[in-house]
Image (cartoon, rainbow, N blue to C red; front, side, top):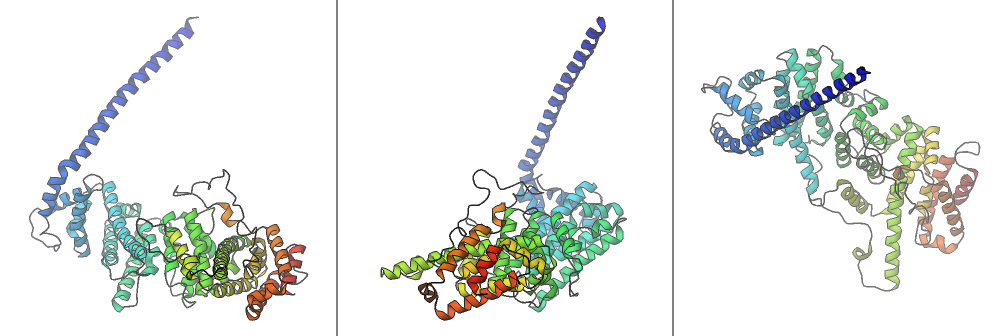
Length: 571
């Protein structure tokens, strides 16, 4: 009878003890936290004045030689490193400290800095190295972004101060890694491989036309390679380096094919920071990789990456949308598509479905804009309105990006649509590309049919008399309460809505084909295009349909679809 009471007493005693301990611990932690916050605030407040004063007194010392005779040089470095710690002092003080350190590192005279770092706890050294390398590559990225925003240039000078600074910084970090095994691990944990990946992403944007630019770009490449070689030589398990995305993605530039197949690049990008994928797309979109088929390995890698970035299961909506926009630009403006065809031929059926679903959607949007533009122009002409084309054309004018309006995808899409002024040429190119893709192999051909690539035939004859009803205004899955999707691995955004990747509806496409077939029987419809223009469109579409549907014994497409489209083109 007394045992339960005794047990209850023990339980109550333990609960009271835990409660008392919790109160004491909470009180202690609050007190400790308050002291820490007060300490940080004190450093930021009082350290700003004393920090600026002390650092300004060091200006005449930096940069200096390794054999400098300055008194108490060790103590000076201790002070400068203290003030360089991020978040401890005000930004102005931290910036002033780095203003002293950067020229010293760039001078390659780093003996005293290395000695000062050796005295620091490895956690603080790791923070310093991460801050240093991140600051340098961020400066390069910001410089490139500013050029893009102003619309000034698609390349970044390899001789710019921010780019040149990367070389001595990488050499300095490599030197630190050679000090000891623990120092090497510290360099690795400071994220140096992620920094190299960010350099790889921005690297194609660096100019190499001038001799001095070519030399500095080559020197940067050498510094990156040296960093990898040193880390692999010093680490007990070099697989940590070899398996990092940068070592898989940054391939041998002298070979005619990438060292790693498509699957390896896909896996590497999926393990890389999400921001790297989007920046990679921006560099490809604005760079020279699309202008010709001469850079074999660069073109192949670019096409591999873009097709990978269309996968909404692994990338956020901004990245997926930008990937499709890049594909469309490549096809309708640049015309150099052999690398893209080669990559599609080696890909899966699902890849082809995804790629053509996105391309079809974008192209339908462009055609819808053009039809609307032509309709307004026709009305204006009939009513003899005294307006200029600029008053009624729906295609947007180029927009210069500013910090206030910067939505990179929206602005880039707007400018691309403006560039596609001659829709006929763009149409011929996209139909030609689809025809060549259908010739690659059965896997690609069936994937294109699954995606609804036959809709390109309908867009060839779209006008204010044939408006592609049900195709250009299809309701998007996700409307009516369905969200954008789950967060990505890093939580940096959401995955793209499935609606942008859905294949064209067979029912909507067949309905459009039936309407077009009836319209083409009327002479007025054919004459509205002009004989030559109509025949060119019909010839291109005939080749596309023939290659997509194949012979009567080939699979792909329903019987109704095959019959409708073959009758349209006269097969």
